[in-house]
Length: 424
Image (tube, rainbow, N blue to C red; front, side, top):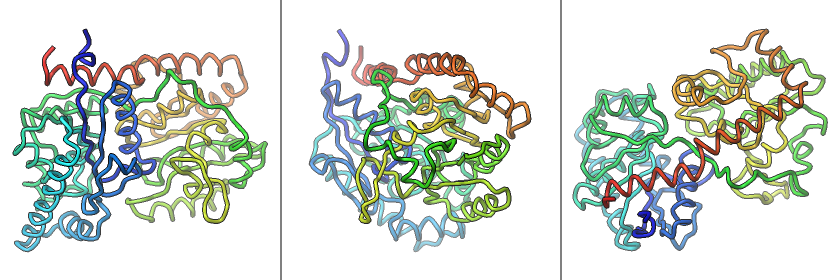
């Protein structure tokens, strides 16, 4: 008998936000879909929410963009200062947030806590401290799902935050089971804290075939300023330096198609505008068409205040001729998983997690090391001119994705986490 037949616990998710197209929000929704499909109830607490209000608990100070949190983060991680006043303020907000977590728990009565990245990357120090103390004080069984850690980002290297980082990012406690999205992060977690970990990479529901072009998205190219015969190279990432957008622009230039455009779906967000300005200058320098369409992408289809269509990321994938993924670093790679789901050819940089966790599984891809070469361009052109090879590649990658990166895999992994808590 499966543990799902004996136990259907309720789960309370906590993060800084559950809204939009960021990786944490997207993966959290997938976890929730798997849990609800097994008959479990799920609830959400965050500083920004686009979830069902009836199962949601909004706490503005949980958001990393809250005014008070931004001030604290700047002092700690930019100015690298720590006064007694700053320490008191952090403790004050921590206590406020802990009371909110208690209220959230009292309101919905969930049995298991799932913390999405808020105990990994310290974008909101008081929230991490509050969650940690709540777990210790209540003994609630917790799954801490870590997407990226502070040691993976130079901007969180601050000696005045070391006590906070050691105690809560992440904390080690018998009631906490740690989940990482790649094996390198797991080994570093074990090395730094001594904690054991479970590997659960990013996923897609491969059991459901990807949607096809329909009446709503049929004119997507025209809507974003492209001709129907434009060769659409898609990079479904944010505009941040580690995403290697210059490489994609160079690739489009060197393919030398009569009509080609690089389409970026996400905005710069919290990592500043300097890199965006650099990209805009680079585009002018090499004369490549670039479309950043973040204002036309939403979690759901619809229309904006000007009557323009709002598409989903899925809509853009359907129109893509080639996916580029030249990231210098990724926690795992949502764009990679989505690309094989949509059966699209992928040009990918061999970043460390790709080499460790993805490449050994045998996916059929065009890969390169740090920069593209003439051989890379030749390989891309030969592939695009060989429909049979494209079809074989797509089918092979889809089946491997179903095996390693599916909802079924996630269900098995969560089942094991529940067995660890409840017993077999």
